[in-house]
Length: 84
Image 1 (spheres, helix red, strand yellow):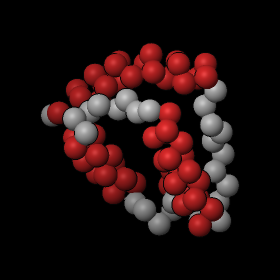
Image 2: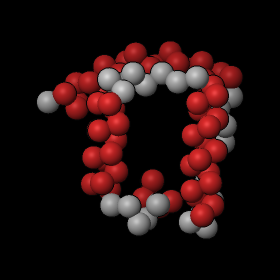
Image 3: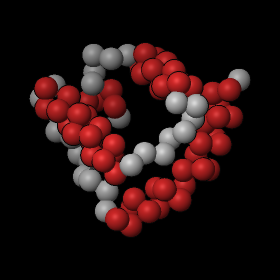
Image 4: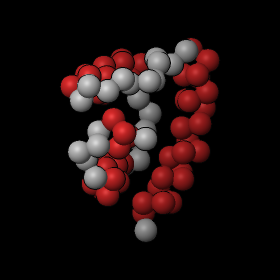
């Protein structure tokens, strides 16, 4: 889906960036609401620069709570996937 909004970036490059990013942050994917807002704004700005509509809406409180509850599980999966 991200290649629709940023078609000039090859998928393999995005995957490599994701892997490197996760390793650099030691797979700690928890972030504060202010960090979420910051990067949401940045992604929307990039999308506008590409003349694409960014379809995602800000998280509701319930969605944010559900997201936080799943962080540990997802961190474990990412560590397993990218540690090899």
